[in-house]
Amino acid sequence: MPPKTKITKEMIIDATFEVVRTEGVENINARSVSKKLNCSTQPVMYHFATIDELKKAVYEKTGEYHTKFLLDRQNQNNVMLGIGLNYIRFAVEEPHLFRFLFQSGFAKENSILEVINSPELTPILSVMQGAMKLNAEQTKNVFITLAMFVHGYASLIANNSFEFDEELASAHLKQVFKGAILAVQEDEK
Image (cartoon, rainbow, N blue to C red; front, top):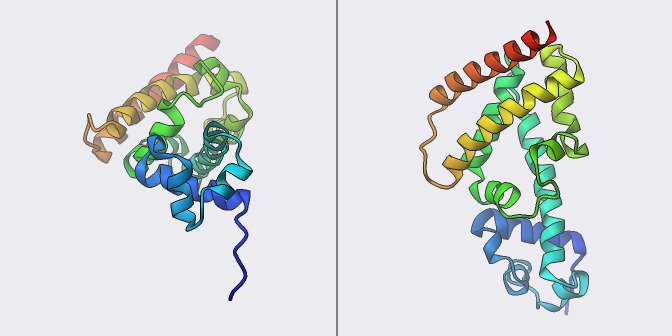
């Protein structure tokens, strides 16, 4: 008889991530995760005292996945446009993960001002700052404007209220981006 596979905490997080990705956060429970791992519920409950604790761990993994998604598919001609379109594409390609990250109540931050200062956003702000050649404060102001627009756009798509048209989204993003930069530059005068 072959030895039993030891179910690790990381294996449970990965399996739960796949449950969220394919079925949505509302389907996370010990049974759905153990089914994905082909084991009993005991290892899941051994590593995570509560399902909420498991959801928080998977939320962190999802946030890392989201950041990588945004940064790995950059438009080399226009980094800002690339990041904005990738945010919207994430909602198109990964609607369950998008809703989990941004509409489930698991975010640590409660406002855009808390988000802008979170360490998780640093890699994205750094790329933006380099592309726009603005200072850190100006970059944050541009980000807030873009984030509000892009998040609204992506939310409509993730909730099946809006059809994704990349050409139209790109045109809208360019307008918002130009306007945000212009506003920041005018504020400096």
